Length: 85
Length: 554
Ligand SMILES: Cc1ncc(C[n+]2csc(CCOP(=O)(O)OP(=O)(O)O)c2C)c(N)n1
Image 1: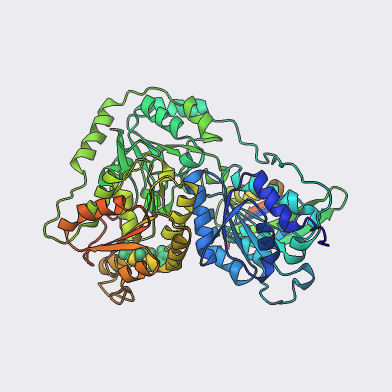
Image 2: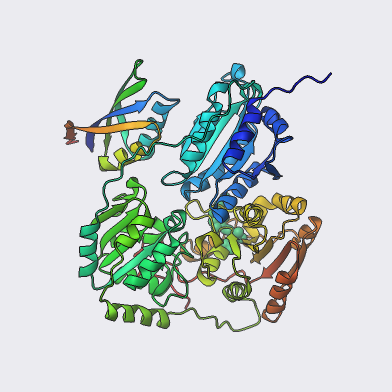
């Protein structure tokens, strides 16, 4: 199992968080932690997502990127680590 | 004195539809969408009343696929909206541009378990490319413009717009918005042309693997010229059929689970696979890690997420096929490989020899294909008849073969044919159906009757859920569980009840005349072709098996 931290920037639009969560689950990633906040000045939300999966993170990044309201998806490699168990 | 009618959200909807060139919509009314149906009354848009919202959704899909335009469907809240879902899922799986408009309970009632309230916005997340719920009348025009732009942009797909009743009734302020241009969010990396050309020129046994993306990108001419210049042997997916000219001597037919032996063997042997608008679907690849095991891969696609999704690629060419295919069109020196592929195509050509008087469905479909007028559009349902149509009919454009590929949805054929006929009133439209699938949207015969649509239905009747029966025979020890349809209704009487002329054939000797009679008849027609319940689709690659280990008729 690999752990990853994603930082996602998105327009603060309807159900954007639900869309991210739905895609993450459907594409085979477990959500281990989440934080989300909106900059009310720019109306841009920042979502930090801790996920784990056997699958390559690129698959999830590409799928989240396809969501209409997403501006950017970054993988924070310094947090990624192999889970021995 | 009559009061001046105010300009409402419902009126605005039709204005925006007209701005996008929408002439036809498919739908079904109900309480929460009544203001929209009231506005329809005065609009120039023609509405086709279907007899089930699933029929409306599939007609919108068929309309879009046959014409290249956006298909539009309407449904009321609650059960109307949920009835659209299968059609939306189908459109998502096959990347079809559809805009679905649903009525919703008034905003004040939302979230209160109101009558016919369902969270269709939430339900839409998994079965649309994008969706909207309009909660402010000032957003309505912008959202509708965005819906059309998103449905068509990049990889196409279905978009749902949920409009609460009070928004439909609300007075529109200000003037009509102009068409929105969607900003292209995903920056596609520059096409990796250099390394792809190097791969092409080194390859000794390359194969062109053509998918549905070619038709969606409107890149048939570019693909055919690419195939001609390179003279690559080619294979097609189910959704790609029609992109390559079926008369091209390097074309080997469909690959995958029910693909031709030549196509599957050539792909297994190739050293370079050039995938164009195809996505390595499991029905195509068989056992994935044994698919084209010696091949390097060049992958052309518009969707970044398809690259390396199921098969690692050596060169990805992202972006518009119309631009990218010509960039790679270089002549190749692969004569021995071409000769080998052509030899395989000859050696493993279809055999239509079928002793006895019972009707052989592949031969019937081949004959229909040979007799059908130019520009005929064929739709299918799902099952054995679908695979026989794909194997034995010939199409010169993907918009002339509409079949539920990704979702494999029974009930697709008749409503999709209705949509196709509405979009192309002068072309012949044929729905090839099975006796199981036909009953899944049989109510749409009423739509055919109402609008006098001259759709021809070819019903391949084996009194079974044939494809499932075949698998039970082959892989479940012949334990036939719930696949017998011996108690089917009298299909001729049923068709006649909808004023559709109908005829049954049971013997080979009757087939040619019956096909001619069907084409000669001006209006809708049902030709029921009775076949042997034991007939199977061959070849068949068993599940999780490499494509060269296909089962054949023995
Ligand atoms: C909506 C839906 N339900 C179930 C299936 C599973 N299924 C696939 S083929 C098939 C049998 C189809 O029977 P019929 O339409 O008579 O066609 P045949 O295979 O006999 O040609 C079934 C049940 C499906 N594809 N779609």
